Image 1 (cartoon, protein in one colour):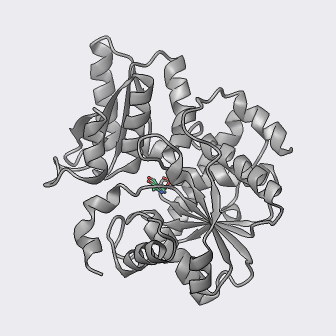
Image 2 (cartoon, rainbow, N blue to C red):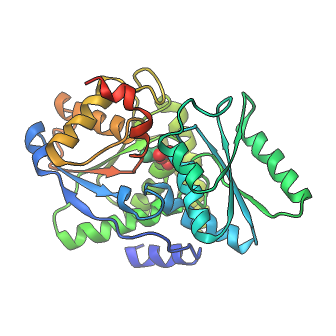
Length: 335
Ligand SMILES: Cc1ncc(COP(=O)(O)O)c(C=O)c1O
């Protein structure tokens, strides 16, 4: 199957077209020189144009198309207090004139209204707190309550990661291949932050369909390799099924590096601080403290340790998240 066939199959899902795509691919000349390794380029999904940008816009174009087809008037989703996914869902809902209820995984509001949580409020999202309960159960109970009140809710799972959501990144892979073909110089590897796994699963599905020979390296931000890979196998297989493709996924289809978990999810350490500061000071660009800062820190370490010595050209996929910088000002101030 070629790129045009894949595009056709994805278009049959009738995704929405919100946002500015294709996102630019730019060289990081000073960072590459500073690291002394492969040529590093960056794909700017942080610039995709809705509600501060980020990777979830692509997934939400597929998910919210289904919400509209089903006549939804309110969308629900879940995430951490500083969830980028929650903020982008609230923004996309606002663009479509839908209400949005966010089930945030904490006991109550943070001391400071900052970062993504501030933006959730500005976007008019209704906020609920899990207070230790299972987020999926809270969303289901909220949805049942809404139905009783005559509303039509649409639930988006954690990270927007299900069969439909990940297709946003299968489309993104096709977009990347078209850009890289026009440029003529192939990339050997893509490095990306991986959490719920939908982004990497969608890209890997695209790479398998188009038989791309490069490596997609997911830097895990939250969990060990094994459970993340198992989930991505299921996600990629379910996406393939939705596209009516006879594809099978195996653990060796996914490269995950879980060496950079540090103090755990959302705990900023020296790795993230150095990555944020280095990109800012070499390129005038920002990565975030939880996802892209950890992924870029991982990329820098992989170059230093020789893990990427065979690669001549590497794409760092910027998946957004920069509003969270403001909520982490204390940790990031300590340079
Ligand atoms: C900025 C950013 N990068 C990467 C990811 C990881 O994407 P996924 O959950 O699809 O693995 C997220 C998820 O929330 C994110 O907010």
